[in-house]
Length: 92
Image 1: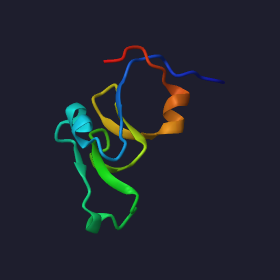
Image 2: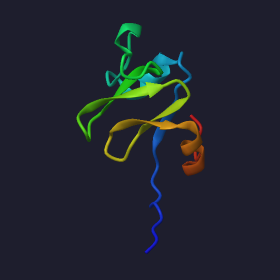
Image 3: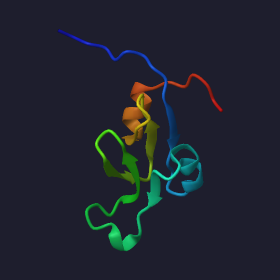
């Protein structure tokens, strides 16, 4: 059997490593900058976003998209995956 993703709209913002305010505009308190001394698991994760579906903080790297999913959850997505899966329907 083969399947296709059902279409639904998402909100997303590209994280360039400097636009913390733009990401916080979408995520509220569910996003924060990870201090350098706390980047022991993955030094490239310079921020974190809270994933409500799994009740955990997820590391975010510069150059990833932060997606707000169907159930209001937030998660990072690599740029290459994002542009392959999503297309712009409305630019705010």
